[in-house]
Amino acid sequence: MVDTLLNVLIIGTIAWFVYQRFVPARGIKNITTSELKFELNSKDKKKQFIDVRTPSEFKVNHINGFKNIPLFELHKRANELSKDKEVFVICQSGMRSSKASKLLKKLGFKSITNVKGGIGAWRL
Image (cartoon, rainbow, N blue to C red; front, side):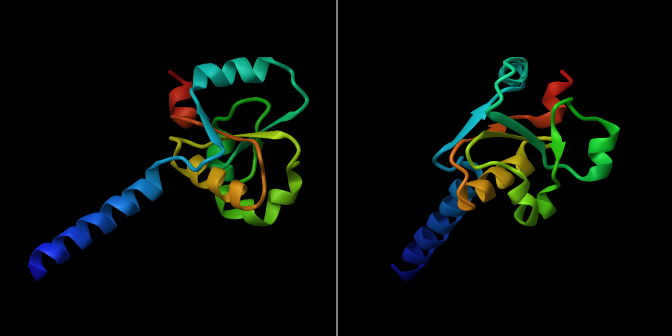
């Protein structure tokens, strides 16, 4: 009985951890790179685009119109972004941008969009 309860507790904890890591937070949209191309062409002044990769990654390859604010600097540089504008976030694969999106949400940003697949998918 105790072993069964312990196993259920362990499995539940693992499931909760996986859910928290990979399910997008409420209020964060996810779009594909195809949808991003449409957003970049819309010329809407109420949008801002950030790339949370390292400066060296950004220097090698980036999308015009994106500002580089590395994930490790985002908390202290978030004041460079407007909370009144939608924020589009990209990285290499989508993992760092997902973390960045959650951080921006915690900092009070209302409209956040994560680009699934990141720069890796953009090149396809």
